[in-house]
Image (cartoon, rainbow, N blue to C red; front, side):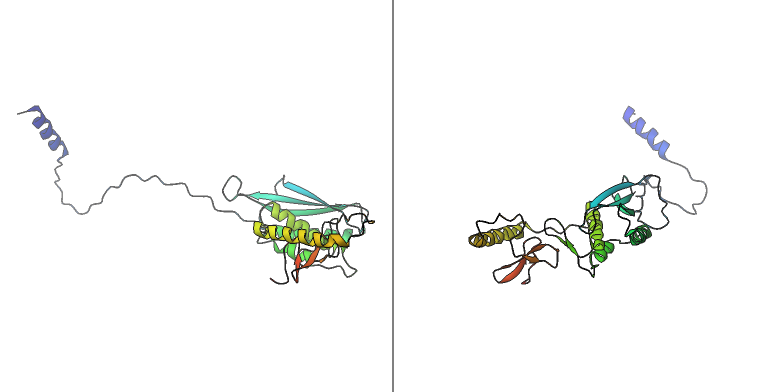
Length: 242
């Protein structure tokens, strides 16, 4: 008998298993499956999260004509889901400091309420919009560059909005390139048409937008002008004609 036949015979003998007892059940053995580690769940802000010893903060300075002293708004963030794809900064607390103590009581109350809303969790973006809609019955004021502020509270709301855009909680709505080009074209045409009416003896205006522009109700910038029979904002592109 050839050696290959002998080896095959021995292998067959080894594989054959004699079963003396009656088979009452069976199962198929599966290959070992390597379990994938479960992805960590996304943690969202809620009031049970304890304040850590260290927070990441940003400070914003605002200067209004209502006071000789500047106001400093500090917003501290809590970083959740650090090191994961869900990593995100969330506002945790806010502080407002100024040498002007005339409005200390309501500013302190406002910061405590805002901080409590931040720590409560949920969508806090609405805070910025609500504060921006507060109007001073004595009238607002214009910032440098022609930006109108309805009230000091509204400017605090704008700071909150700026901060939330910085950390990605609010997506900034930018004009398309075509829209920007159209505004630039209309603005250049308007300035060219107004050039003949400028008094040579008067110094050139340092205003960012053409003289006679009206206040835009959307962005609060004095940049609303009449173009092609329609009031259009040269800052944000808002138009009364849609």
